[in-house]
Image 1: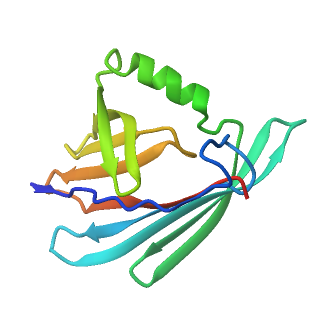
Image 2: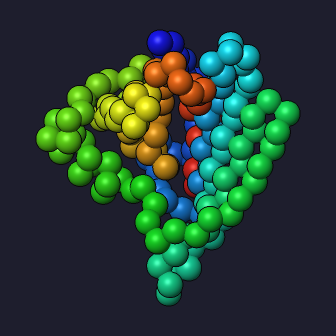
Length: 163
């Protein structure tokens, strides 16, 4: 089994110390490594950005860009629900009931109070996510490979809000 840990670097560009999300222009980037079972490793970068909000239809358009080595993909998805401060507070309040643990995650720019939740896929891969008070919610993610599939560890590298 392989354990991939997330090392975090966060850049926050805010007009003030407090911000509301979700909002059009919110953008989060995770960067890290993707490693195949054979040991081949690739850089990975995932960026999510809120493009628009239709208040009448209660829908959000989100652009998702992904880079894996030299391969690039870009999609725009529509969703009725985006992670919000209310969902963060609810998740934090129910964290232990959901099998998670509340952890302070120290970053270069400060400490985030998070709910760490773990899941195990059918093939035995363990995925751990630290959910925090940021757009899209995920501050960090690690994957412990079951030995049967590839592993990845995207790390949060930037948050842009209030643009």
